Image (cartoon, rainbow, N blue to C red):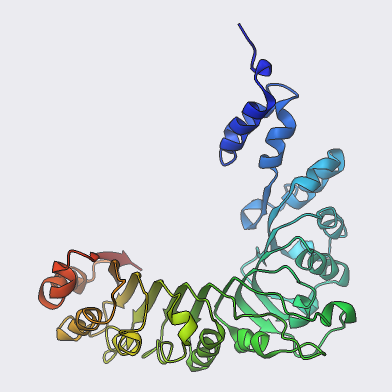
Length: 403
């Protein structure tokens, strides 16, 4: 009987590549023979996660320490790591080994930096060696994707050398009150890195707006938002609307907009902010809003916004998620008909519309079931065009969520 090793190496490599998302299978294959070990290792160690779950008991060694031991005993593994998720925990800043472990990584493509403890980290409170190690990873030329969350006083100038950054996500970030030193060569780029994707939420202190407006000493922006194709935004307050409008206005090739809001009329002016070039490329809308008061428009102003782009858009898909509290006087009447009416004209490329209404309620709340029945009647009563149009796939659903 022929052995597995008799197969052509190209065939073996194809099989291993097909198993790249099955860690258990890769681990099993890596132990069968020395030939498979390097082929499996490049997938096994491609993505490393050191998160809050990595710290189950203080009496056990932290995973970052164990990871360091692994890299010391197998130096080649550090060159295989492409994606790192690292959540800062309290002992990390005081541990001199952590910067040394992070310093072994040189080929990251994706870096997600967050917090393991249920707190927000103050950047300036971290020890300098730890900050330097994190900055080095963020600024690696190979890094194209960054996700940074729950950090106070994060200096915008850290992004100056990120010349290949294409995908940036920020959550719960605040800017540093004072500037920090930076490499003049990296700050003087003739052209700003061109983002393809940008997302922000819980934008403390309008960090996204400051990032958008900040210029290098030579006048070049820190980042170029004009090429953003996927924009994900969240409006928690009035100041967020200004940031969202500025970002939408800056994009020229927007394809997907993900918009979440928790304020009345939270979609205000997003359509008016869109330039003509993005109107010719925007194909997908993901919209989500909350209903928490007694007078709020159940559609949060979205019909008025859609009417602005009516007749001059190429939108193909609209996904709308509405979250309602049972203690609100939630409207289930003719107000909903505006959505059907506006979509029935001026959206020639529209092919999919999805509407889900989630009813949040407390346990044993007597109104939840009755409200769901009322909500389920909305399509029949107020969506005649969507319900009968054979060219548009319309999906309507409701769900109950106990809080």
